Image (cartoon, rainbow over all chains, first blue to last red; front, side, top):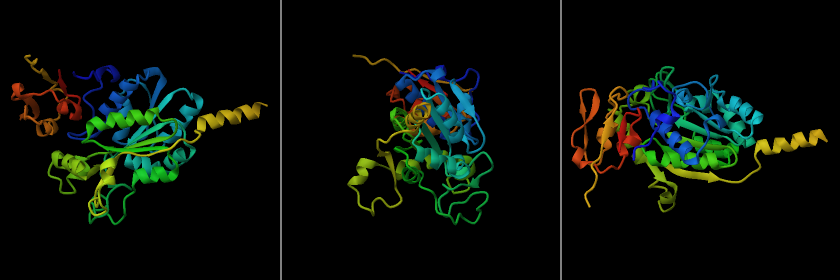
Length: 270
Length: 63
């Protein structure tokens, strides 16, 4: 049966601003299905974002939402969570917003293990501001500021999150739409800082500069490079060359920041 | 048992013509009509929901 997305979307907000074929809409649908599965209440759920194409997402969602300064989603969300620890806090943003401009906030939110979920829509570029290269632009790829090819190696967002101390890290793609809501739901349920990286497509500023003829070609690329974690265990290093692992990549239980801070408050009261 | 026919609603106001639904439909039910998607062969629909799941623009509803 058709899923009723409308009850979670602010009336009159659609159609959204994203370009034709942009995967952000697919991720937003996945987030809505995950929220519906978990039965999260609108007035007890905060969706926080920074600036960018992906960061426009909270504007469409009929929840408590915050659209903040560029890269500062994690900082504002930390404030929300500390003031109201019972609230479900979900951060959304792009790769530039999350790993470059907000890179510092991102790694320290991971380190602190605050009970929030960060959905990073990685489309390998700064889309909204005009196609500048981001830390997730692959080596050799063209952007408006790397017209002769990007000399920098790209960040592996999942590895960065694991290294910085996130206790749940998963990765999906915009092509594998059914997997998105499962990963996000599992991430929201996890007690601690959870990161879900969704590999996305930007046909307008990335695709046309990098010889992708169409949105379909970009989607097929996502389909081809994605390898589920379990399938990867049986594959050789040669077979995994150029592939990207998807699914739940890392999970551990560790004391989370809001619980630890509550103990500090108790100690201070004595 | 006769299977109930699918009903595919396409909200033309939302459709941006990205071709994703047309391309990834396993039974080729949809086609592009001008700039928007439209139903070509409803009988072939197996209600797999791939078009609805992948439509980035909230423009397709299958029931």
